[in-house]
Image 1 (cartoon, one colour):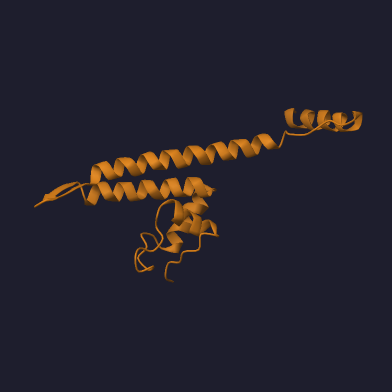
Image 2 (cartoon, rainbow, N blue to C red; image 1 turned 120 degrees about the horizontal axis):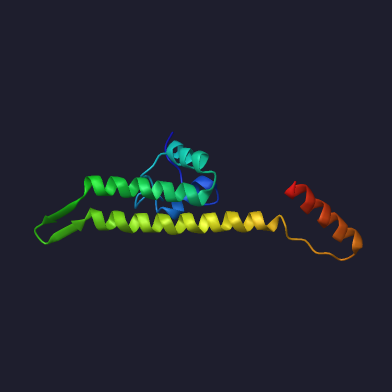
Length: 129
């Protein structure tokens, strides 16, 4: 099955975060859909999946490009790889922060009367036991 790009899906959003959107012709993808889906399945979140994919790209970049100088053209795969890993770290940290914030929201409630206060107290007691 050919790779696809739809940024409204989790798979497409991972592609957007890692700049794997099909290239100039719209059909030149770095990863197949199944590979992106594997990142999503293993990671459990779009951010962690994108960070994992970026690390895979960085590893490949470092292996393939290394440092090449040809006439006036210079490439530095190691530097590109380092930047990709740093971006992966930032995306992963943001994803973890978002997940932590979501967990904290479970405890957010407002006491408007003694009944809601009692319910909150009961919920906290259940969570702590």
